[in-house]
Each structure stands twice: as C-alpha cells, then as structure tokens.
Length: 156
Image (cartoon, rainbow, N blue to C red):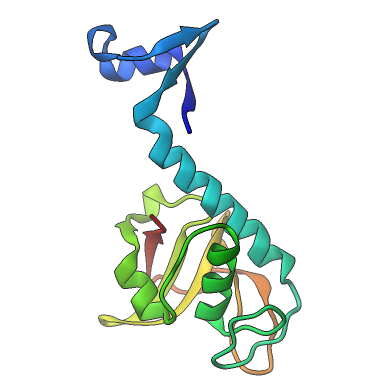
C-alpha cells in the first residue's frame, strides 16, 4: 500500500535529493508513508465499528457482538478492522504506541488511569469525545472525556 503525498509538502519535509519515489501528475507515491496511512485506515474503521454499536448494553467481560465491556468494545472494533488487541484495558495500553494529547487522532485509544493502573478505555472520536462502553446499566455511547487523567495509545 502506498500513500499519496502532495509534491511541495514532501519536498519541504525531506528535500528533493532524498526522495526515492516516482511521480504521477502532481502526486508523489512515497513508500515510506504507507505504515502510518495503513494504521490510520485501521483506526478509522475501528472508530466506525464502535460507533455502529451505539446503544449496545454494557456487560462485564463481554466482547460482542451485542454486549461489551470497555476493552471488549475496543478489542471487537479493532479485530473487525483487521488488528489484534489483547483483552484488558491495561494490556491494550501496554501493547499500543504511546502518544501525547497533541498527537492524538480519531481512532486512537484513550486510557483512563489512576496512578500507573489503567481502569478504562475508549476510542477517540475527535473534539474531546470517545466511543466507549462505560459501566453496568449503561450502553455504548459517545461521550466527552471527563478526566484529565488519560493516556493515549495508537494501535500498530
């Protein structure tokens, strides 16, 4: 898979001498950009899958397709998008590439923590909101991030 990058922005970043690509019209096909583009595709798919589960009831230990706990929803969504995640929120945090708040993108995972322990996970939807399965008696929903004690992770 190759990503399409606009020529002037590519040259501004890496310089014309170091670009080993071929041009089609005004677009350069750059092999080095494919992994990030592929990750973005999986994240976008996982986000859409999580959103499609809106209203599905919470159930501790459930991984879908009709009931979920928090990490069950993220596991299910990324599995359907073609990426494998471990079962628990803590294990998922340990498996992701950790990123800063300023680097977060739609489809990244948002981990809620107390000290070093992760206790909840959702999928970042943009504008400070996540899709998640919050707790017993609740359903999968889109909700504003309510805590500053969050870490972000990108599924590789």
